[in-house]
Length: 120
Ligand code: SF4
Ligand code: SF4
Image (cartoon, rainbow, N blue to C red; front, side, top):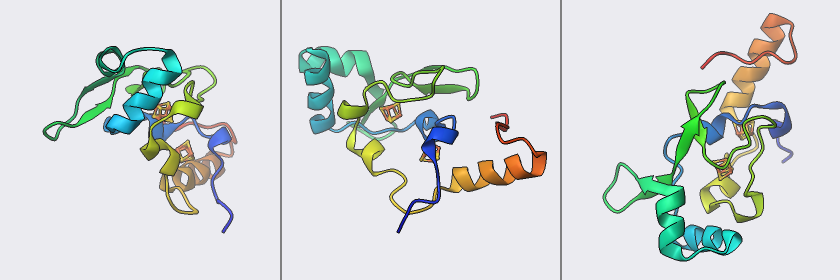
């Protein structure tokens, strides 16, 4: 079924999720992408998650959402490590619809502004 959302028209809300889990395999891919050793990549790109042993992507401040993944280009709202992004990012949203995109589309229609971005 065709996707009913268009990430190109969204300011990457899903990249503001604080818990983007990075597996060992994901970390290896990121390390290879940047030509780094695993430990350096782990320290530089990830931090402790809420569950024991879990690593999640680091964030930085953002002008739309409170913070976003460190790999998001904050101007054009695209992933700067697209080819090397974690598996969870590849799978999201995992269905033909995206709840946030539905909300965004509704707000844009209500505001009669196709570029409207609801404040976080
Ligand atoms: S929140 Fe939905 S529409 Fe926006 S970038 Fe993520 S998957 Fe795409
Ligand atoms: S790695 Fe890319 S797709 Fe995944 S959260 Fe970060 S910016 Fe978004």
